[in-house]
Each structure stands twice: as structure tokens, then as C-alpha cells.
Image 1 (spheres, rainbow, N blue to C red):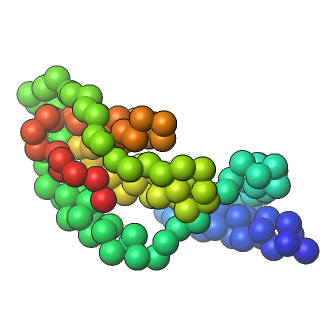
Image 2 (image 1 turned 90 degrees about the vertical axis):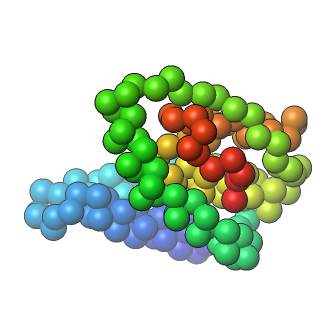
Length: 149
């Protein structure tokens, strides 16, 4: 019963995401979304059943999400200006306590990778749990946030 519930949860989430990105509810998009959501839910459930999708999110981490969200609009204009100037991007290493192998540690690494990449000027490339660093790419160096959420 747990597998069916998990599959249905993935299916519903992926279908809603498909429809949100498609921006229309034409029958062709609904059929394509149903197929894609079924494939995605099946793949997610296979990965989850093998124990490869183990993470846990702490709700208090969401208190930090406002920092990268505030950077979305200013970074949008920085990226637009970069289209004209074509600056050289920069890779940087940020020290970050990535934790160990617990589910909460994996969730923290995933949260940081997604949250820090919300602003268009910054992209998390890798989270190295062994060395405790996060590899970040800044399209326009100097204008990106220097800390991670």
C-alpha cells in the first residue's frame, strides 16, 4: 500500500508540474502530461524502493529561502546585462558543513543546492560531502551572493 501511495503522490506532483510548465490544458498536453507523470512516478518509485532516494527536510530551513528569492529579480537584470557584455564566469568553492550519511544530511545538501541555484546568476555545480565544500558557478562574478542559505 505504501508503494501505491508513494507512486500516486509522485504522479500527482509531476502531473501538476507538467501542466504548470505547459501553461495550457489542451487535451494533447494533458495526455502528454499523464504519460510523462506516469513514467516519472515509476522511475521515482523504483529509485525510492532501492533506498537511493533517502532524505529528510527540516521545515525551519525554509526560513532561509527568502535570501535567494530576494536575489531573483536583481540577478535577472544582471544576467540580461551580461548578454551584452559577455563577462567571464567564475567558479568558486564555498565551505559548507555538508554533514554525513544521515537522511537529514542528504536533505540539507539537496536543499542548499536548490535554494542557492534559485537566483539566475548562481548555479550550484557540486556538493562535496567528503571535503565539506560546495562548488558554485557565478555568471557575473562579484554580483552573486557570497553565502549559501
